[in-house]
Image: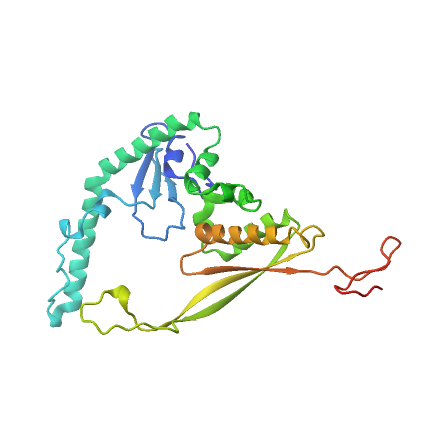
Length: 295
């Protein structure tokens, strides 16, 4: 068996295991030591005995249990000052050895759980014509009918399985919005800013037994904001359909903010009209300037 090259970023280890015979793929869990935006499969290596060694960024059962079950909680406390550095390094080595043994102890159970997930996936795969569609339905289970029938959101729903890679990545988000809006003949221009928020009307309470919700002191904080200027020119949408366009854009904004934006950031869409250039031709002899004057 050869080492797989150019694995898709959304592939998980259960799918990779299904392509190898039993015993030919060994999995090692490394824990969630990286951000969730990283791939499930961190690294693959073909061993000398022909087995595939796969490093996975998932937690072991060890990571789910309290730390004091494996390590002294006061390990680095009360170290002698005159030998603090040496004792710290010794205790750190002991802790690393304990972690290694804990992973080895739970490895059979972790592999068994992975095998069960792989078997479930293999069982359910024939029941779905397209696994990507199933993921869309699972991730977008809370979408309302209004959101599903929105002309912009309907084009973004196929990207839901990749939302964790797009979230927080302004470049990918901009490319996604440009692709969707381009289908409607709309163009966008991104810009970033930081908006300041202040509590102008703080509430105070003079009771000793008041709750936290009954009184608070005013404060000021900043929040990053992603602005997208939407430019359009359409004879239809410039008239009675314009308000419908604004409603659709607002629904799109809320959807993108929920699925593709970090919780610390806000999203603002501004809609503006691009006037067509003034021109004279055989077909167009005049152009309205927005008031009762003709050329």
